[in-house]
Image (cartoon, rainbow, N blue to C red):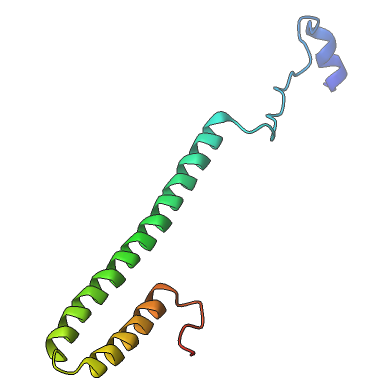
Length: 105
């Protein structure tokens, strides 16, 4: 049997064309995407700020401990104490701002 003869014996009048669902749009993006993006950006910002804050505290604590140690060590020699504190200030500046050229001058 050929396909035309098969189709003549069947009632195909009740069949309809295939209906495909619409393609989901790429824009505007769904709300959950924007919420996830906002949460991710907030977490990244919090991490960056936290690292900077911890680094600043670390440099400050280091400087305070070092100043106490220098005062005990050079309590009799004011000139040497001033020189060492100047060097300490330069080291702390390089710790806090490594991208700048604080080592010169």
